[in-house]
Length: 311
Image 1 (cartoon, helix red, strand yellow):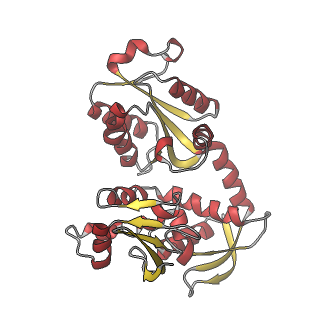
Image 2 (cartoon, rainbow, N blue to C red; image 1 turned 90 degrees about the vertical axis):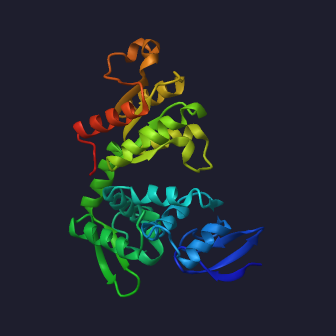
Image 3 (cartoon, rainbow, N blue to C red; image 1 turned 90 degrees about the horizontal axis):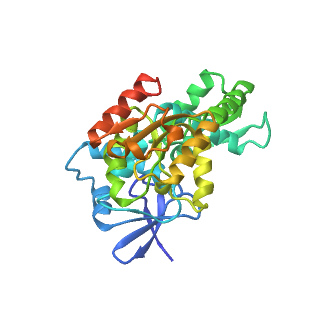
């Protein structure tokens, strides 16, 4: 049995099941039903006491709810990773959040015209919002643009709405399915540990700096087969960055699959491997990089030049 407590992130009444020196928190908002997350002692103290060395850290905390809610059970929050997790959510473009709200309503709709209930107080982590207020802002934008309509507005109770997707909204969802989720970028590359910095210090910062949502399949907690997960991510991506350093066959497959879906592919490779690039892809305009800064700057410039940047 656990002890009654409050979630250190959102303040909701929760259950703590002690696990060694760590805290196993079952929060209905952050971890959702039948799930929990673990927080180690040091960040638990910071979250409880709020004695932040950097005041900006306080503004990051609410985004942890969205990160935890959308992962598989067993997320561990530590001093080393919590800011990375929260920052990744805060960097997600507003257009992607709006699309997630529309997808959330779709997931609860049994048929076109079905009226479903959404509540900012409970649902905000599912759409990458920081809180119920941001969730309400996103819903009201969808109302103004005509993608959804409401039959009842219970705004005085935690942003509660009875909504249905309009024909215009269904058209938007269909168009998004065909073209991918706006702002989402799938990254295809070798997972060799020696290339971790290529992603961490060049590709990911370039994408986030352009307001995009980077997705690398090995960094997405999911119980599905990795190939199934890869195909699903490619189908929902708006564009793809493929780095061929290491000459992995899988990267060629993923880039080709993306091309078949009509997605824009940004072709990259370390310059010293230029002569190893398969002959049937050499007609594409590769970003050939020597340093990580070369790759970061080249990718940023190309994304912006082609109009994919979201900021």
